[in-house]
Image (cartoon, rainbow, N blue to C red; front, side, top):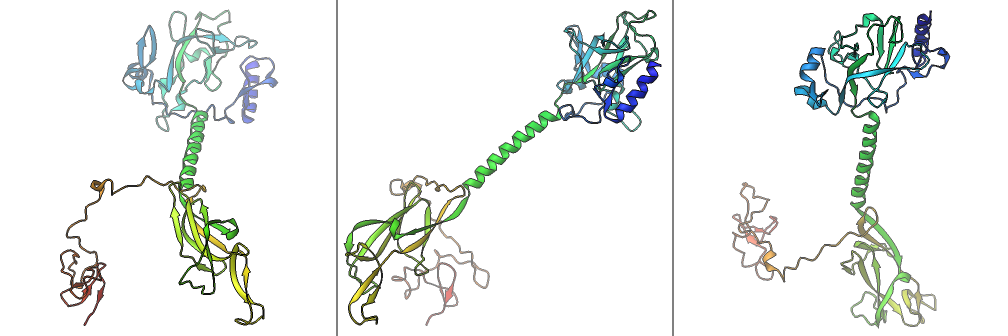
Length: 407
């Protein structure tokens, strides 16, 4: 009756991802052992176990004797010594309050052994299992105890169940029993996933580093208010401001490699002096019309009559606005400036100019032109720097292969 009740309860709770802890327990409603449906990834195996077709295959290829104990080894097992471990004739221990019907397997230190490998864990084919993983039970005198005696093994919960007679029964004739089999000791998915998380974090950090180091264009908006005067006001001859008496040099340092400056007041590109400093900064210099009286830039001139050129000229002062376009890193840092390569101090580092260098643009007949093998045309050498050459059809060829006709 108890065995029948155990089977019914187990089947029912298995549906709901729970199973009775063991055969023989009195309070079946307190079942706590997992049934295997809902398994956390810290119990899921992450490494491949080998095929062990039979017990004979196990003994010949996967086990070796060491210090009187059989361990995983041999010609095939040595490659899986960190994945599977062999349990060699360990004792069993009754689970309390199960009437001697359920047992766990313990080691020499009385610790429970778990994570057993079952033949069904490694199918050889659709119709064959790795029978070498079978859990075997032996009597006290070393004889194999057949399962026909009435025992079974739950590999998921690592519990041995007895039906009928058991080691506590008066008719038990096998004495103290022992078992042997394989357990899984390899990595679990929790450790693999943890490693993946760490690897992803590392990759993300490396990608962020790469992205941060990439070059980006950073606009800097500034005005003459933020600039510093350099020296004293001075007259500037040949200026496109003929009515301006004085100019003032102003400067500002931009934290980046500035390549273009735009005047927002005139909406045009400003051609001016810039110094790219070893720190990665760019110092900009601008010469602007200057009012000595008001000590600020002159924007334009008006006349007190209200009509251009009539009456007294009045300077209109204010501030100029600019945008400096600069190269910076994507993280907003300045681009590092490498040490200067000094060809004057080290002429041996100068790359030799190749002799007989041929242009990539050929003539119509497909023959490439060498700028070193053609004599300069007397009409176009000298002031032109020797960049004009005669071709066979009496046209001038410059160093870029372009042609121009001549008289």
